Amino acid sequence: MSAFVLGGSAIVPSLLLLWYILARDKNPEPRSLLVKTFLLGVFICLPVALLEEVIQGLLRPWLSGMWRAAWLEALFVAAIPEEVFKFLVLFGYVWRKPAFNEPLDGVVYGATASLGFATLENIFYVSEGGMGVALARALSSVPAHAFFGVVMGAHTGRARFCETESERFRLLSTGLIGAIALHAAYDAVLLTRSEFVLLMPVVLFVTVFWGRRLYKRLQAEQVRVLPEVTEQILVPEWMRAAGGMGRALPADPSVPSTGLVQIPLEPPVVERTWWSWCKLILGGLGLSFSSFVLLGASMGVSGWKTPWGLAEIVSLGVVLLMVGLPSVGSFLIFRSGLRGPFAPARGP
Image 1 (cartoon, one colour):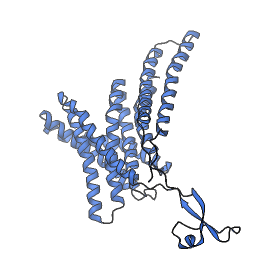
Image 2 (cartoon, rainbow, N blue to C red; image 1 turned 180 degrees about the vertical axis):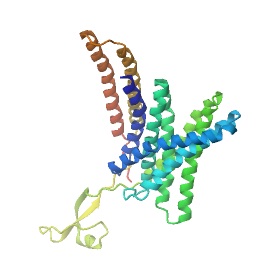
Image 3 (cartoon, rainbow, N blue to C red; image 1 turned 60 degrees about the horizontal axis):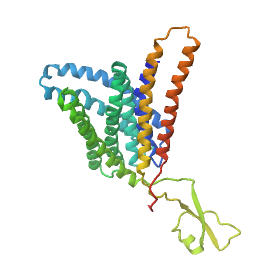
Image 4 (tube, rainbow, N blue to C red; image 1 turned 135 degrees about the vertical axis):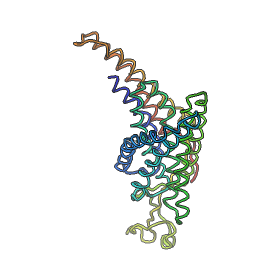
């Protein structure tokens, strides 16, 4: 039971972040490609771990001094191998897929690959460190990995639709180097194992701020594609002939002097309200803490002897009910936050 709960506490934060990013995409990506990208992110964790062991062995003679050792390990053992492999998933696999058809897709696939990597890495750390590590990484490391992917993906998405090779190379380099620099700074302050670890929230804030800013810009530029959703209206024949209002539908025989035109429905520009943000935060925290409560309950259950009597079965049912109801409630609150409320719509 406890192993199951530890695994859940390692996986849930990544899935919540991934769900949030995907839910805000106006043009959802193919599920099969998202799943493959996520699994590739999981898969690269193993070769990266082996490569990091080799690099750490080579660097061991130079790992002297607090800051020198911290930066060497953070940069060459963690940041460069991990971000380069994530970049290979994004550039080597997703880049030429037909579904990669707008700049914001770079953010979606970059975050998906990063969170796939963070999920398996989180399982390794949580299995060794327990729920304390799970809580710390849920609030710091997992969001950091997600936004490393957002920064890299935003620049990759821009590069995907550049007209010149020089600009494409500049954007790809900026995205990769930016993700490496943020990752190295994040790990370096932690690897000092001193009072400088208090700088970690500052690095995390800069990472989230930069990634969110890039994401919001691309989202503002995103054009919603509604292939089969149209509005039919009657317009004068001269306007239909001019073709300025869209592709004409077959003329209606009962209306000889007018025609029907097809006009894409432009979605209004909406902003999430503070109440919507509150529901997202409360729901996410509720799901995380429900797993911690379940861990404590499972530790108590693990001491029971078999065969169980009626009292143990009833107690287990009460425990599951006490944990299950808040979990379901937190999930519903989080889902409600994704759906709104939004500020009054304004025109596109």
